[in-house]
Image (cartoon, rainbow, N blue to C red; front, side):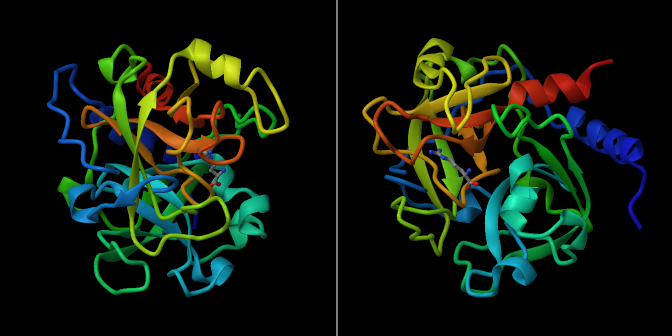
Length: 275
Ligand code: ARG
């Protein structure tokens, strides 16, 4: 039985408020070579906050039903992209998907290990705009808590992790070539946070979306080559040890002049921690 939306939301907001990073300089983990396009394999034990969103009913069992990513921001709270739960992606109304779960602590989707935890409640941002892609956020409440060490702090507005030029990494089990070659094991790609001006210039508004500063951020390499891709959506973009974005959209994958666009986490923090 689903609880009323506002109660679920309030419960999630309390947990999210607790998960916001203290405004301290946290040393960023040593950047190894990187998901994704131009990425390389990583150990999920080093990035336990990167989880797979899965449904075997909807996506079959070959890759444990993985279809999107997510980020653990409290033991029972996972952030993902609103569009991951759309009819377009699921091929069925969300309400009819009974086996939605997250897979945590498992590198290889074809192997056992880690844990599969059922999603108890789903809140999808009703303001998500599928034309611009603004507000691409959903909050999942898990049936059972994940270990506390799976949680990644969220970077609030003003955090230096959002500064243009900051090195970041994006994680996922998505397409590694742009041709539908889905990864079996978790990968990460090194990208850089780009300035709002560069993101606006790349996406003034086209069929894929419109870059909107304040609610989105974009990252990549202007020459292309490293990026998230299909199947990575909802997954974490991390800089300075903190969550700054969720994979949302882009034109193609890893193309020069078309960086990846992310849901800006500072907006999520601001929205859920407002008095
Ligand atoms: N919408 C895609 C998904 O559902 C993610 C696209 C990200 N694209 C990019 N070039 N960064 O998986």
